[in-house]
Image (cartoon, rainbow, N blue to C red; front, side):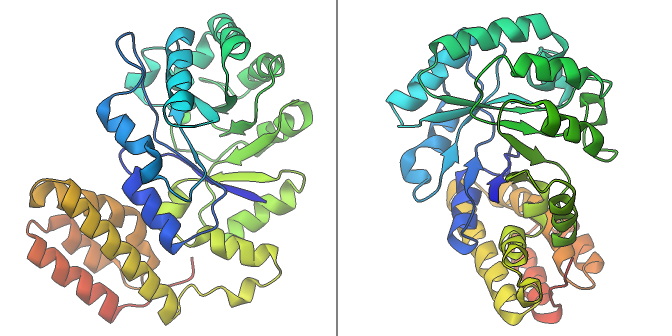
Length: 325
């Protein structure tokens, strides 16, 4: 099984990716939050900083591109290869955000199959890099995916990453495994699954249901439990019971992971407020790893000074243990 870390806008930038790679090695690919080329430039300064090779050392990083203009996509792909050395890029056809969809980008591009077809024809004719696609299964109805799959089957995608929800679901309701099974049956391109794998038990159920699928992308599940892939790999090796989640060693690793993120965000951001916002965002996912976490989370959400934040975190690590999710 190959494991990919899904991109999450505003969270999984290079600081987070490099810290995760340092403490939880083993990811086969990290995907960047989407890059948005336009008529004036391929990449903005923030995007350049995120994809610089020195910020992605030792990782197999894949830049993700969000656009509905083939010209912009090709310009960004060319710059990513020629200036930064990337041989693969990913097209975002999955973002369900209303502001993105209203511009006909992300999942919104799926509503315009003729335009998407022309777009794909141009980029596969001209792009000098491997192109993968991350997609939803439609805008409103799962059955839309049959036509979308027919379209994808016309082109030699490096791989097709399927999040089996429609755009209107956002992240509600359950991923549609019946429609993903249709992708397994119909797709001529290599498949990767994405959607709602938060625990080893959920990963195990997926493996039992789709034994032929050899790639899984995980996003929010890794934000909750950064060691999830390592635990899944123990399952793959028949050593499920030896996973260290809940041990002193695992808690120390989480603490070191947190401290590295804290230190690097403190260098990157100006002032206490932006740093506290970043750390609160991190804990909104990760706090449930701990026993009796609710009272600590209430305090983290309300804290307004770094000195108070540091004391809350010290007490959380001292007073609580990790729990198996």
